[in-house]
Image (cartoon, rainbow, N blue to C red; front, side, top):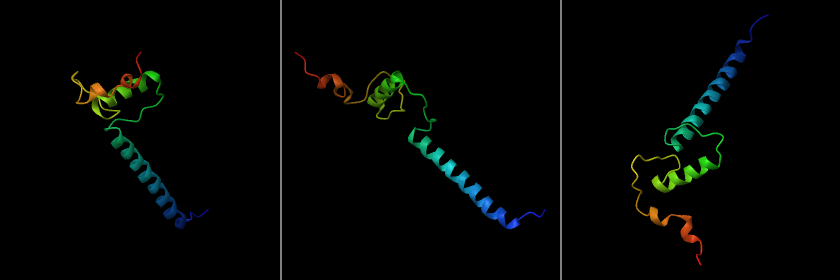
Length: 85
């Protein structure tokens, strides 16, 4: 049975386009996550740590090794918005 050679060109184009789009999606998500892979199965603890990291560094994937917070960190707590009696 002969091979339909004219069908290989569209097949190659489709394969290349899927590869290019997948690679661009991976590069885009890693760029948004500071070069780290995407997180999966995030629970409440992870969400709390991501909020803390965002308050400390300004980005939810950023982490710091020094305990000194950035300027304005003391006023970025939710506890200041609650009324105390």
